[in-house]
Amino acid sequence: MLCALALLSATAPLATDMYLPGLPIMSESLGTTTVGVQLTLTTFMAGLGIGQLVVGPLSDGWGRRRLLLIGTIVLALSSALCALAPTIEVLVAARLIQGFSGGTGIVLARAVIADRARGKAAAKLFSIMMIIGGVAPVLAPILGGVLLDPIGWRGIFWVLAAIAVAMTAGVVLFVPETLPPEKRHGGGLSALIGNFGYVLANRRFLGYAATFALSFGAMFAYISASPFVTQEVLGLSPTQFSLVFAVNSLGLITGNIVNTRLVGRFEVRSLLRTGVSTLFGGGVLLLIASLVAGDRAWLILPLLFVCVSSLSFIMGNATALGQSEVPKAAGTGSALMGASQFGLAAVVSPLVGLGGADTAVPMAIAIVTTGALALTALTVLTRPPLPSGARK
Image 1 (tube, rainbow, N blue to C red):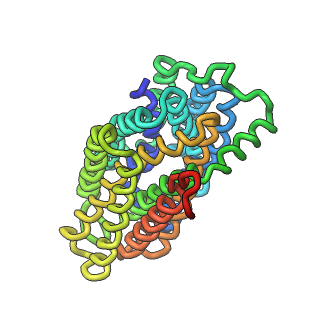
Image 2 (image 1 turned 120 degrees about the vertical axis):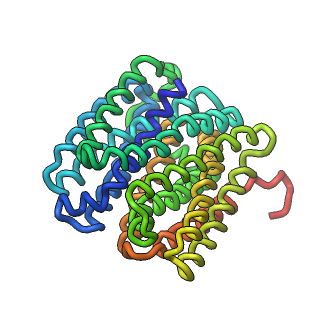
Image 3 (image 1 turned 90 degrees about the vertical axis):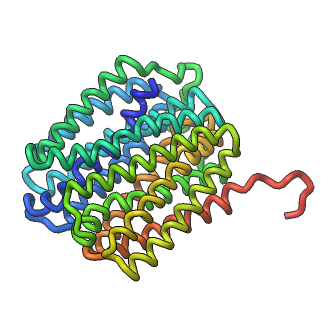
């Protein structure tokens, strides 16, 4: 079941990383600009956010499995539409649908684990799932770089359609219904609104959700800008970019393995704080390096590795801590975390693109800014409550 959930959670890296090496070629093929092709990333991320915001709360009343099946089927169809898109406008619209349906798998994979586990057990399960799912961001850019020449960027979307079919089979075979009828809300719209109120009123949940989303914003600044930074600024080939991307993804997997082993020995919040602090510190050094020697690959690439690897101590731990704060509405909590995560990513991508494709500075600024805000949210909003009678 964890493998099937990991594949569902891998929708975002699969649907972004596989076609990243082809972004420069796509802009020429469809007669559009750099900002135009980056808009396909933006709409996909917006769709992921909106889809989770809709499907997560619905699953608290309808159950998880039925919605998972519908979502994976629509994901396969929308991926085929992306492959057939004749213009950038059609591709942007198809990516929105692809993102919306893909968000179903992401939000419900988290909800299924939250149905089954809490606390450190949940943190371990989320980290294990991310280790399994971490194969996707390692293989996806390599496959994209290898497949780009023989099948083109349209062929890559056909491959994504086939993967979506495999996701559907995984749900059918391995994912049971984890939310029994007696635990579902039955009050229709009023219960839906009540769940949102219950989740949004929890300050600590909001702090962990903000930390989670802002850290992913840093990740997506790297994802959306790295094809142009590595190829046009650092002078690497598409294949070399794919290898660099894969190495960074391996750092993410290794970090998740280490995090899984440390969860039983250290407090989850302490590990989370270490990850966020490393992200911010690495971003500061990256910004300095970009300003001083922005075309030196030997300087830029190791700092990118540090920033990406730090996320392995953030994403799973922030998810587990946030979900543990709202056990009565796991689907709604997962939806809000996911919507904020990909909604912020949708904003970051075009902002980084507007900074130009001939410098790494916009990417570095985005990483520093989101890292600083994530550290602030974690420090201010997730503080444990004061003991009774203690001075404020």
